[in-house]
Length: 503
Image (tube, rainbow, N blue to C red):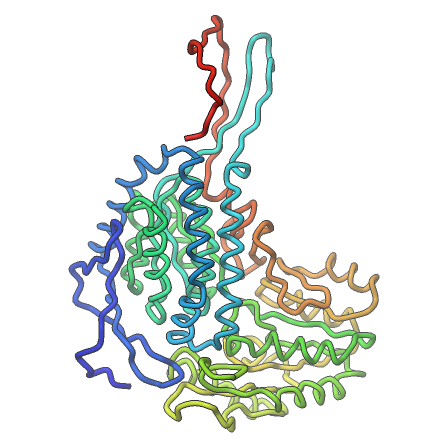
């Protein structure tokens, strides 16, 4: 890694509608994972930098929170059109900093754009209710109003989609935003902030502060930040939830996962094998919704493992800007950590069917490579099973029955996503009822809800009461006010025969 290179660009923050260097001298390297080189540096914001962003957001909220719904929607629609027209540009940025292949980057952007389009319906989503003559001459109605300055902390694995889960809804509802993206791939956040400014968003409504723990703690502690939205590992999610709520903030903190796919004997094993490979190795397994454990009823396990292995042999690992199926991992350190689990697998008596350390890559030798890996007969006591590996390692656990499979899934500490593959409608219906997981797929391996539903798990996969986007996202970024009203004398505003207009 050429960390000593001094002529590389440094990515600044975005505060008050423009780039902002701030007072911190700390920086971090941003890599091109497929090349194994440093492409730029990013500033690591100080507590003062976060304070500057919050001050800009607070000042902007005075006007933006009082701006008409119609005017806010005009900006949202412009942002949507600009975003859609230039999505290929963002995909290239994603691939260069995260490493995921261009097609995967395009998919991430498409799912994020769904939330922008959902937020374009905000006039309907924040309508209140009205009860006329609740008592004689008394009307009662409710209003939904913004909550103020909101903080967002997003992870490296979806540097565009995860921020888009939150800020379009927050902004359309009248809030202002301070986003702290991952320092590993920070450029998409700046790209989106600049695009929003181009769409006509007033200065200070959307701000970006890069950084590490210091910046996160500053957001958690700042008295003018009303809420925190977080996505990341479970230990940090718990930390954010506990410290944010202690500071009196609303918090939605989405944590880790260990997602299981239960395969019954009547399932279409070709569909299962395709789905397991797609869900296990897309984005190099760096997805909180990745399938990391295939739970196979023992009678079909050997056949299924053979089919998965066959499909894995056809995958091409390499530079995501080429015609490859899977790219590198985000950093060399993370690659080495994931690869270390393969030694654990062997020591724990697992069958290492496909060893990703032996992969031939279509890319630079210095890239952060680990190929798709398949581990069979994994004991549930092994850390290969219990840990969220967050890489291209697919484990197979064998069970004797449907009941044993459900019991295994429910015994885990996480409750993010799961799937069942079967042609038995009764078994599928029973599964969706009995499994203790927040998002369930039936013959669908990655059950990420569409934008007008909400995303979030159970147990140690979600801290707080609100899931991301959808109806729960709207509720999280608004607060309801009930008004009881009596008017004794009617009045009017005079004559005006013009057609009424929104403004």
